[in-house]
Length: 203
Length: 101
Image 1 (cartoon, rainbow over the protein chains, first blue to last red):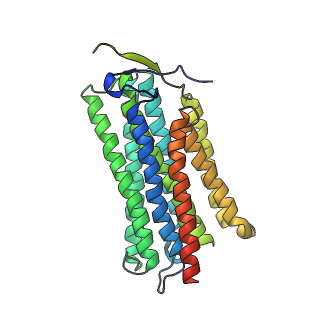
Image 2 (tube, chains in turn purple, green):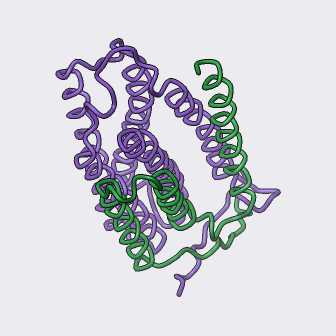
Image 3 (tube, rainbow over the protein chains, first blue to last red):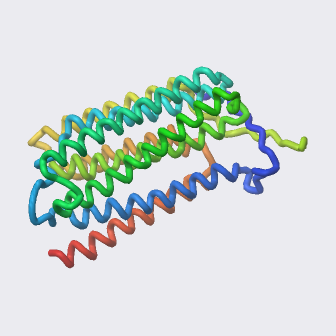
């Protein structure tokens, strides 16, 4: 059961020889490169796993229940994002604005969880300079948090743009591109949650 | 420039489908926490967590990022990045784990 296919006007500046929009092609290429970026950070975390000479170690500080909740929050933000896209594709700009704001709020909530976690770790004696776990953990999750921050700014910019009348059904690609970025940030967290948190503590 | 062409995008799922996917994603996250606390599953925890994580990853990428419905070129571009990232992880693990061992 599928919705009516969205119709999009394609101007000459994005005139596609492939039949695909160049901006979307560029976004997927960028996301492919981001895979390699986060792959390198995850590899570094794994390579140095268990090599810390002093504590705190992952089992001492990682809080699975709290991080599970923040993971759930980020997953639900992806739902809000995709509902925003569905809204603009059927021409409902007001609903799109509401869903975009909800996505941004959940993104900010996730960042709040991360700030709480970082603060707790520092109070427990784990900083980026404490040991290899601290260095690789803060680098990996810090870069992910920075990506979430960029996503939140992007979403709020879209809300502001729509308030000035800049977004309509024909320009739904603007929302779709932001959505692709947002969902990518979500899937990166899915991997981090498993590799760093669940396996880091369970093993 | 009034020579604009109208392009029909691939059909996307309905909001109800998105909500069903979200329910599955939430349920898998809950299952991960349950598995984490089940001592009996400790010997198989690595493959179980990797499988659950891969399922969530696929759910978001296929349905929310629309790779299931969009051009295969997009899937290919993303897959190149994923394969290279996996290769980097495996190569570094093989190289440095051996060196440090």
